[in-house]
Length: 435
Ligand SMILES: C[S@@+](CC[C@H](N)C(=O)[O-])C[C@H]1O[C@@H](n2cnc3c(N)ncnc32)[C@H](O)[C@@H]1O
Image (cartoon, rainbow, N blue to C red; front, side, top):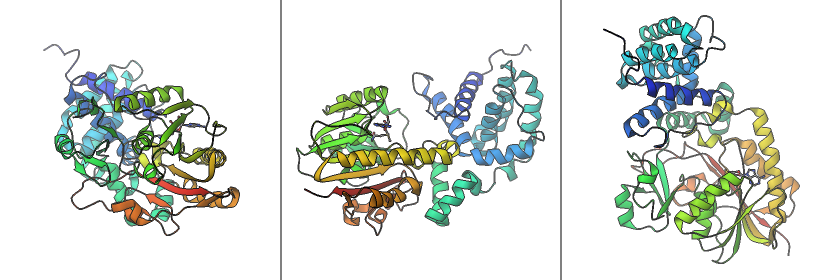
């Protein structure tokens, strides 16, 4: 029988390998959209393969160190990405079957002129993995985080929370939405669970976000339950002038507009500002938009409040971006910390006396959160901490710390019957003294 040139599943495997290779090369993961893979089942499969390879990255590293006697071959095109995907399938996605993992891996490297010569090695390695799959698939969850992060987080958050972080990493993130109106019919049509305030959660869905009820009418926007907390901590009268520094793509800007403030949204990245504009216009919301550097921005008049959602290492988003924990370096943390300080100092300058500054980062690194509050106390004398109370946070009350700052993380208890966890976020609220 002549061999089929394009066996079923090969094209998808090649696309998935290409996406994984991009992430292994240092890029952020972005799931396949409908424009890239039209068939929703194929799209879901490709995304599942890549996310499993990323979530299990540390365990797959360990398996590779055992299976590849001479290490990863150099300059071998798609070999590594294909191998990681196949191990993800073989060890962690048993419902997809072992046969296709092996067959498609060999076909995929044969299709790549730079990896073709390694098809025999691919076959041998995967057969060894298959023979040892019971043991390899039961590797410790301790391997899910890089050793340095594991050690650091276990000191900061405790072992029990780290177990919950691991579970959250493997589960991935459900879809949280912030609603324009808490309309029970909308919540029912979305099949969503209310999470308090104006957040609802959709645990599982088969449609892309754009296909969900109410999207075209701009009745909600995507925003993790933890990400929705900072903007709520500004509680001024409607009409107050509020700036959103580092605003794009605009989830928090939308909350500020919804609260009735006179909002200025500032971001340094023009392409991201376009997304912010599109998001606000879908929602029927208006804000003054400025493109510029929040470290030296000078407004025509000071603001009553500023929300500073500062650029950070984003390690708190590891449920959706498992790669962040593998890409993060100490240098990244240092450079973010330095930038955050500049942004804090300028935000303080742009406030009216008595004005409120909410600082937040979607990072789990204490250097970007808790330590920055200590830095503010020592260096920005015109800012004083304005403590957040547990009551202000509703069901997230346990996230309020004794010093009045807020630490959200994926280990926090969720309300009864709610699946999934939360992003990691740190929030501190300050007031500008004087005047
Ligand atoms: C964490 S994201 C903001 C998310 C946004 N607040 C939301 O809720 O949708 C950080 C943003 O900071 C912007 N940014 C980074 N450095 C900046 C700077 N120096 N000045 C202004 N914006 C900056 C980035 O372009 C990015 O859009």
